Length: 131
Image 1: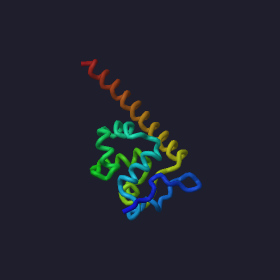
Image 2: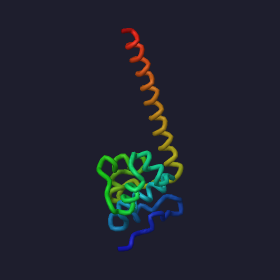
Image 3: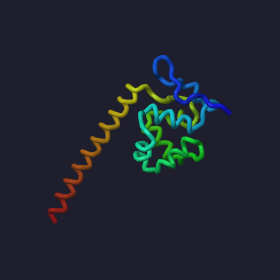
Image 4: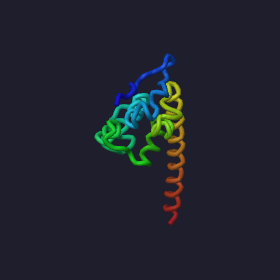
């Protein structure tokens, strides 16, 4: 069975969602397209997920499928909906500006979490120092 070109784009520069539907592309095709759309290479995504590159290559080649927990993390990291990743329906890869905005938002959230964690650590250290 022939599959649609996973990096096809419309004239606006946004990937054509219809080419990623269930009958057109596989989970591996959509995962590859989303990873490339996010500007990540295999090594960078594998590191962020905490998996080996070979594992990610297997997913993209449809030799294996990620567990549900990884599918959720992948959709969040790549800026696509979980439904799109699994079926090709719904919100797929964003254009570069939309993805950068999403990544900036994620970065701000992580920075906020780190600041809150640092404050908790300081508070605990003070409490332990009072013993």
